[in-house]
Image 1: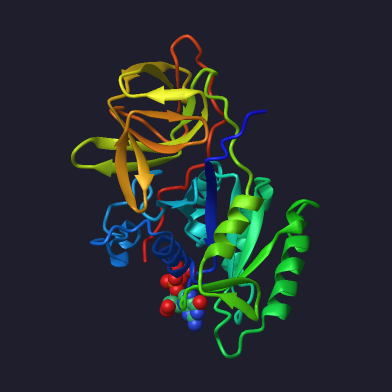
Image 2 (image 1 turned 90 degrees about the horizontal axis):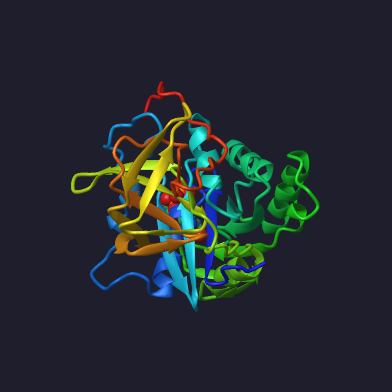
Length: 312
Ligand code: GDP
């Protein structure tokens, strides 16, 4: 089996305020993925002003960080239970999760909620014990709490082998022990590379790409975000979308976007394992599969949140 050693797809999950944003920003900064004129506060994630449509995400975002020769795609997840469907869908695009836990607060309701989803989806977990700079941090106890939670939520034997990295995202330090910190994010990156599985490379097989999140942009209209599960997708390619009612719609891919840092960049081709955005598809919906006309094969349907949510 061929693997894509050049990428890792990982979701970052945590209870609110345990430090996901700070950690990802620190990783960006450390890896030098930011351009000089880019600032952390440009993050698209915090703009809550786009109206929420059925299945359209306003909270999820992808940050692509190059570390050594590997592109690490970090997909953020909402922690709140109202976004259960969205969390599940994001988890369909990754091979592993980084669970961030505050070394003082320990496991909280949203820690349980997101971890449960990750374990159910059979993802490979790693734990980042964050905020170890806090004077009252209790790393040893909290790691025990985390382990108990894994057991309680039915983690399998492999998932129970999760590695732990201790960090202060705030100070930009990390390490394999709470009291042995280096002023780099290397231990975090290294753990991702060593522990999170690389995607399967089956780029020669017929294309399968599932619309997992929807986004909208004034220039190109509706954008479908997803992972190339199988095969290769190219600009100009003629494909079909498989609808829920069993019908097909034919279209041509006009634009493909990959990610660098927090930005989308136009690309010409995406292969199995890549998380990309596709434009040029009118009337697309979450869950639909994009594939070649001569090989229409749908991926399993996805759960979508009911549109009764109140944004706070
Ligand atoms: P998110 O909700 O998980 O994205 O959390 P944020 O990254 O926004 O962080 C929440 C708060 O915790 C902010 O005030 C951060 O400055 C703070 N914070 C994040 N990481 C650390 C850390 O390592 N140590 C300390 N002391 N505070 C942190």
